[in-house]
Length: 174
Length: 410
Image 1: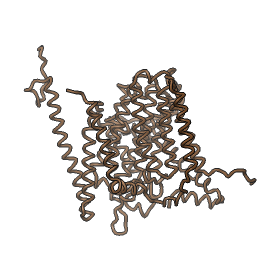
Image 2: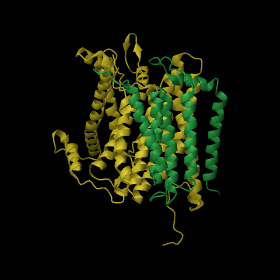
Image 3: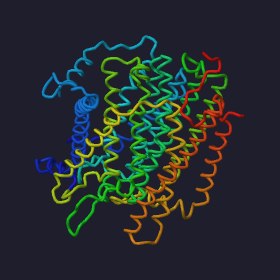
Image 4: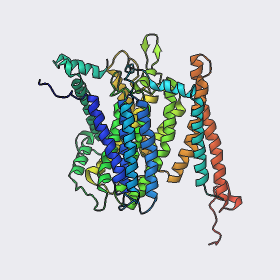
């Protein structure tokens, strides 16, 4: 077998590249599609890609939660909002407005800053792989009810307040 | 022994080089996925036949009996007919969503198979978060319905799509909370772990009868009702009410694309039954399942087909509900009920008592909570009904079964 000038990519790298392509493609559809519903579908694809990245990083729980919450709840909400605004549903709207130049510059600058940070920080090398059959969620659950119980309860309160507010806004007044 | 380990070992024995372990693993998982996916699609033929036969018997008919023995190949003929039909795409449909939706709905259902344990060691992927994964898959079906409804560019399809999403989202909540009950009891979300926990040892022999339905009948009932709604089965099949709504969100689909939605629906009701079997009916557990590994898949399939037949029995027996009744039932009956059940279960599991008293308490609490909550809600709904009737009914007639006299007279 002749020597290759570069090492062969591992299976993980190939899968990561495919997932990254899906995510980037979805994100591009979100901003470039002339139809808002297509943008929403692109957003779903991007969310799926992000979930894939989590699963490659062996954070199954975060990955599945990502699909459950972002694809299941938030995308559906966005789609409903789009569908209920008449006129945006069908037909093309321009994906650009007058500020697109400014937005492009800011995006480019943010990308440069992020790229500089990501490439200069000495990221810790991967530790040992998680032992077989070890459930991360158990530790996560314990952390929620011990160390982080107050932030956890505050978040729950926030959601409860949002829920109550939505019900108050939506009910018919008598 | 895991099936994938056995298959990998077989490939090495056949002379696969050790350096190519990633290829060997890839081939193994490809074989597993290939068998599961194709078996599921063939299974759908059988499921449709069972449905038609069961419903025919309930309605005092014979059902398909011309093609093949007992009419077994009727579905094959129907599938061939659908394949040869003209494939219409509406001119003003949105091509991407219109074409992607049928595929997505089948894929979302087929992915369920990955975490279903058919027997000891016979599971596609024993995920740590399998129960959550199953719930997340439901969102794929919702997206597919939305895409089909919107992509067809038909007002009726769009409205039906909205109704599907409302129904699926509403019934997902009681379903997830009911699935939480066995998860709490076992302390793991892995499907294999839940199935293994439902053993019952009598000395060294595994009777395999420690099913959670004996401890959590209330949770099982709620799961079954919510699963009926998730699978769009009677009494919650108002989305595709064939006689009134011309099939709801897939009204514009024809030929094989229509068949895809049909397939997804049948497989979904079967798989939701399979999940019920794993969570509440002991999965592959049964007498001597631990000693004779071959019995595991047989028990599992027998139970799943039994649940499927029960679902068809319900389908042949119950009338359809209205959409407002359906939504009220989800939010005002099932959600409070399942919340009360889960709370009671959590408190009982934390009591410092011997295990068997704990289990007895769980069973008692399950039954008690169901009875109490249904009583309270029943009283509430009766008052509601009386109050709403007062608006247009003479006071003296409330509570009697007499029809309202029209004021104009005859």
